[in-house]
Length: 507
Image 1 (spheres, rainbow, N blue to C red):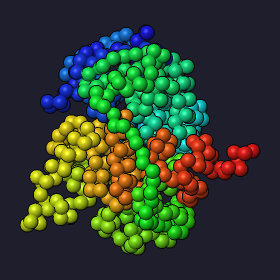
Image 2 (image 1 turned 90 degrees about the horizontal axis):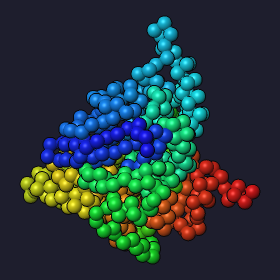
Image 3 (image 1 turned 45 degrees about the vertical axis):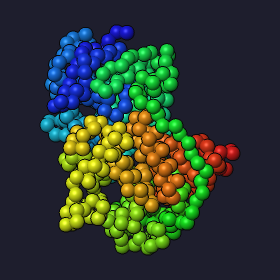
Image 4 (image 1 turned 135 degrees about the vertical axis):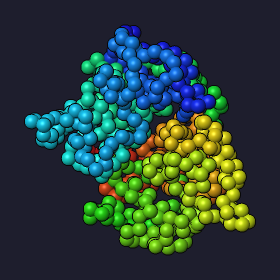
């Protein structure tokens, strides 16, 4: 294939860690490349080399047939290379339009033309099916809307090559299909796309060519038409996958009870409306819904972060009103938030100290003198790192330096390590590779078998149906339907997620 991009023998080190070991890759004009590999395989590191965020130790980059030195993102953008990162790089106190045009603002007589910026963003939004309000403040957007803003920003700045790092991790199934349409339009225009993903079905739907990395090395390249998900899994994973078995559900006593729970945000907008919900010991309640329908606020109420709610919330038989995050943890609550960097980690602390977060006051991590037992904490961290295949396998490694997927493994491992009686889990396998996804799923089922009550919030229908005993759908802050998982299909759930009913399906 004619090459828009050629990477030859790139080596990238971080101290003693070889993140990319003589890696080569080619991307043709108007082609879609899928870059696969487990967390820590070196995929994002390689893409950051292309985008000018990492300076390689050795190797060559050719773009449009010319050898280039990409020393900064500004240089990459000038060439026509754009990257949409897994963790957003947006300014919360600016509008969508201001974020998108930043660096190439429309001006007249030296004055920023706000209307021109808004009109251009609205035009791009409609052209690519990425609907968003250009005047909305980014800080008030849902995670999915922030992702759309990032993609629109890349398109506005004229990408010839668009690098997408886990682009569907924050999208609903409907939004994901819209993104795939965008990718097809870009390809039709002769532009190229490199997608970093863990989702094999997305690779099989979109890619022309598939590259697979493992432990910093490029294992191979295959044409999509000549491969299969099974073959790609064998290339990606060098260890046996956990065999998945789900025992019958035998629910016990009610562990979480919500009655008439409502929440109005600081803008006086109702976000949660009369939520009624029960979750029993030994069951998994899966909650589906399009991002931004109250899921995040529900997690913040249940975990004790948000206290300005009305109604009734009982946890393990106790009234949760007025209880702090620490109080709820001491009762037996564990929580995995959807935003791992904002809610899950202190990024400038090492892995071991992040494993301690939220539990530093408990006796299990104290010496007889009442001080933190850091030897015990290091043992906990090493155990989690080993069980969840965290890479690098170093408890002294700073959290910020781990890839997004490895950050997620640390958080999941921390919350599950203590065998909580009630667990709130939002998107547990977002950005996590196939092998560790299976380990996380098995860990969730072990908690269920041990009698834990689990609220699972996920946009992944496969995960939802694979794990859930009962399923509910939240729409505009209200649970509009719930029942046993076998009572639903993806189509039926999608209908409720969009505000429809079974009667609409029958029409």
